[in-house]
Image (cartoon, rainbow, N blue to C red; front, top):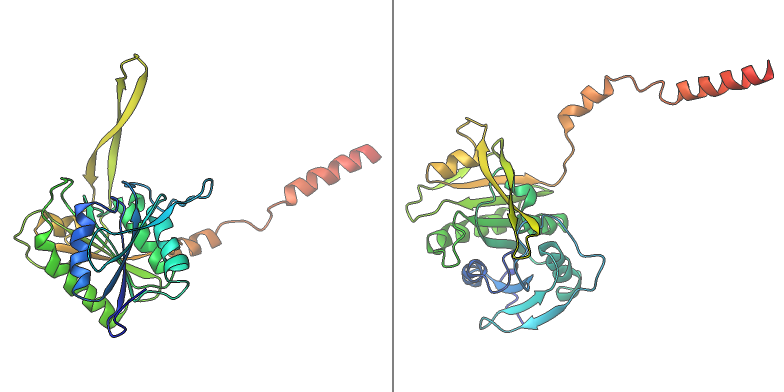
Length: 277
């Protein structure tokens, strides 16, 4: 891997595939900052969450799409891409930064759970690499990412300068349109998808189902990512991959678990007594 040792090394990943316009925009920004290495899926992998490939071989090939950029395509998931990058490309030596995106479509609120974009960034953080996921509220193939670039560069430089708290990464979302008001540090909104399955028929009259739904926001707070995006701000949410509900531990400790298994022993002893009697 040829690189300028004075510049940071940056791993770029995504879930929309190696030829997606979003990753091209992200590569262009990262080239202004450091030495770029790209490992991305060979096709769309949206909604894969933190899936990994364990039941079939992974294909991993070097490609030449953009001048001056070391690039690889992977047949697996976004998380597979990060794992291969760390173990095969970097040979265990970690890059200075991992950035994922720019995703076509938001990954705010509960979407972070399903997102391949964010799961790639989470995997980077698990590997102790400062990591950021970037997403834009535009699913169009010809989406305009130009208004995101200066914000992406600023956020990336801040992370490189300050680092991130241990086991933490950033989830950054951009509203559509050029008139951005600034950056808001937010919490994840309490919202979810009210899902429906549209039943349809193929040409052979066999039924199939297409997932649809409406995004419902139950959170009226003005400190959330949904509020920020709705009001023209870039939302930045610090995310952790420790899913422990720490506030619930004292509650569970108040429950009665002292006699677990004792009832079974009492029944067994009673049966033995009956048999002996």
